[in-house]
Image (tube, rainbow, N blue to C red; front, side):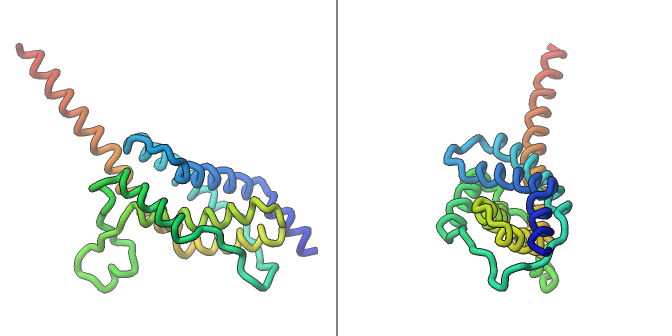
Length: 191
C-alpha cells in the first residue's frame, strides 16, 4: 500500500510543478553561455521565488528505503557553478547577512556570498532532479523527502537570503541609470 501512496505523491501535480522549476533552475546554471549580469539576475529573480513557492507546497512523504538517495553533484560541479555565479556577480557577490548561524555569536554583520548560496541550492536541487530522472518511484520518494527536509532546514533560508542582494543589484543599478537619464533630460529643458 505504501508503494502505491508514494506513486501518487511523486507523480502529483505539486511535485511535477516543483520538478519543472527545479529542472529549469539547474539547466540555467549549467548552461555554458554567460548572459549579462542584469539578464542573469532577472532570470534568477524569477526562478528562485517560484522554486521557493513550489518547494513549500510539496506534500509530506515518509522514507521508504533504509539508505539515503544517491548524490550526483560532485565537488567540481559545485565549484563550477559557484565560480560562474561569482564571475557574473563580480564585486556584488558578497553581501551582509543577518540570517546565518554565525550571526548569533557576532556583534558585526556576517559576510555571505551569492555564488556560494546559489551553489548550495543547486547542489540539493540537482541531486533531487538527478534521482528523479531515473524514474524509480521509491528512490524518487526518498529524494523528495531529503530535498524537502533540506529546503526546510537549509536551502530555503539561503534562497530567501540571496533574493535581497540580487534585487538590490538589479533595481539599484536601474535606479542609478534612470537618475542619470532624468538629470540629463532636466538639464536639456533649461537650455
